[in-house]
Length: 242
Image (cartoon, rainbow, N blue to C red):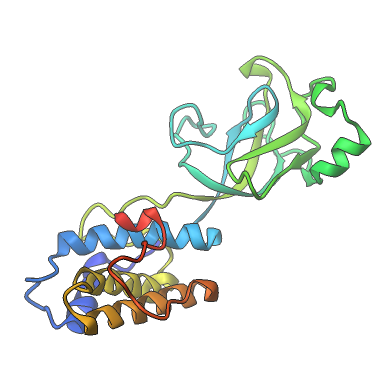
């Protein structure tokens, strides 16, 4: 969780934009851009916002990351934020979520299928031994042995996963990502501000490209560097429509 206020980021942006009166780019608009930038950063770099939390599994082998609803709760009853990509299952936490247990190790799907083709139908047991993850399906994973039927018999686990960052609700609030992402988020806000005028100003179109490239390079995504900006060009991701 960051400590730098959105207002501080916007002050720096206003100085660069030469809009200290906030006439062309009001704070409410920049706040939308900031929240879109936080989400974009996590999509491009899942480790930008991770949670290490405890929640209960469901029956069977197939499991899901929390979806931000009351279906996924921590032992104390708090709703677990929505996950984007599993990073690791760490350990068993027992039937109450309060008792640290055995470590959980990753194995490959191909190995499990070859070693025991019927592993999805194995005898159920609460304590998890292994987890199986497919990068092409980042919000789901599998566990072995299968979890028992009945919530009272299902285990809690400690899980590390990237999560949807909470939106910054007001200018007076701090950014959600760590302060280390301050300059990266500033670059994203400037990209969106200049992109607003790209169709009517070639200079601002070029500036939008410059700040987009600084944003993606800060996230170590050289593959997303742009050479030019066109009003007809698709935005880099739907999440930039914040």
